[in-house]
Image: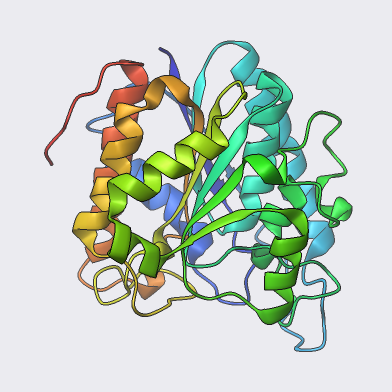
Length: 300
């Protein structure tokens, strides 16, 4: 299958700088391996990010300005039968990629692999960092300001699964319960194992849907292993578990219609540890997407 790598170099959704540099670095790393098509979006250099602690809608308009052409480009490429692999950037860019996939494919599910559930609203956010709101926006749970550009299906909360969560605001927990999102914590992974959790996640996200969007946030991994993220959360999964999650996805690639890898922040990385993990994850997915339906373990 034709693949396209989409760089989404924005860290407008978080007060920490650096994630906007991640896509360019990872795309450069992949040049010797990936010969397919790619496009890249970079946030404007003249933007002065809001860092006001009282601002509950930080960079809202700038994020919409960034996500609108990103969304349109992915929709167009999916109409041409490309499999999109988005490299972020902070997680706010996925409002564009996930909804583009829903626009093209119709009723799809989503598996959100993340230390955070990203289910705040403008009313419940504590920090005002919009990378804590995208999954709610994708589900159509308030946050309509983040999807003005979208006129298609949302992804239903009942077909939404978070994997690896371990940092959830109290009000965010209420949002998740009310919406009906399934959440598997890091502890669930430790107790049940990766395969059992992912089997359940695919069963929920794939039930009577036309495919599954995967969104993989590197902060699901413990920062002792992968320090190069903007908002690290300790007691995360191991590198082995991170690769096991990806390898399970590879085995179910016939059900996967689009994939994100986000939140790599090279300014926070140590000895390129996170970068190498990210490259390994992407290399596996690229090869699997190019050979759609054929599971192939790749060693790098």
